[in-house]
Image (cartoon, rainbow, N blue to C red; front, side, top):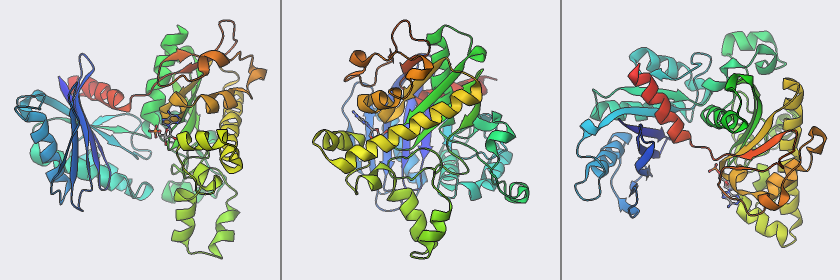
Length: 397
Ligand code: AMP
């Protein structure tokens, strides 16, 4: 069966068509500037990337163009829509309602809508993607895979904030965590590399990308994670501030309005802000650091230091750790960050293979020495494949 994986944003729609049996990506691409003008980028497996300008007033036209591209007699990869057996939708926020993926029904859509408050930018866009697919493929089963679901196993002591209880009861203000599909995918693979049963492992996953989070996975379950009610909490990220003294909000609010403060915390902070606005991209920061730029050096050090602090906290939470995994854009590619983070972890008995780490990019690798008490892995994440697997499993059931 072929599964169409959709990741819908407010003005974009990323897609991959995956053969769920062979797990081969048949084609992938993105629709951008939906509601503005419209641009489709499409690439069939082994073929050239094609870019075309297309009028996309809504997501329905975008999906229509995706289907046309996938079924195009020359560059398409399937003959008709009938060859798409199911659609898997990435959903950002499932609140407390979804602890796992589900087949999409009217009740599911209503429950997702009820979580809109918690992710006002993402959930409505995800639902628009579902509606657009339903319009064009009314008989194709669809599955929702939530970023938050994997973390629903966190105990109250990890997810409650030190706020009046009534805000949890009334408004569901609590920690949820994100990147769950990635943390789940990578921690499962880590158990295979360790040669242990998934429900007998203590793994810390560092998903370090534009958005970054660390998760403690104990016996196959997320028991704590660094993001909270929103993806702003936790690590210092590309442009997000991560953990800060909440009183900074008030301090800044005397100088700016609330929207201005939130823009600073979400878009102008993180390594971008720390580097004096140089870049949120670690390739630029690395180049600048090596050229002696002090702010870029500090930005990278702050980033790695915060990751190391979370690892230390999660070793305590799990009373030990078997392995630490680096994944996502920075985790998979940035050898300097990996070395900086691991330089704090000698006390765990980690023997880090500095030579092997140097220049290693995007390849599954064990970075610890054979005798190391705790293993260190680089494991590339693949959220689309994880969504396709979940979709296939649910549709088969
Ligand atoms: P992601 O959100 O997982 O796609 O990660 C994107 C981020 O990964 C970029 O903003 C970069 O900071 C980082 N990244 C990607 N490639 C490299 C690389 N070759 N070296 C260092 N950092 C990289």
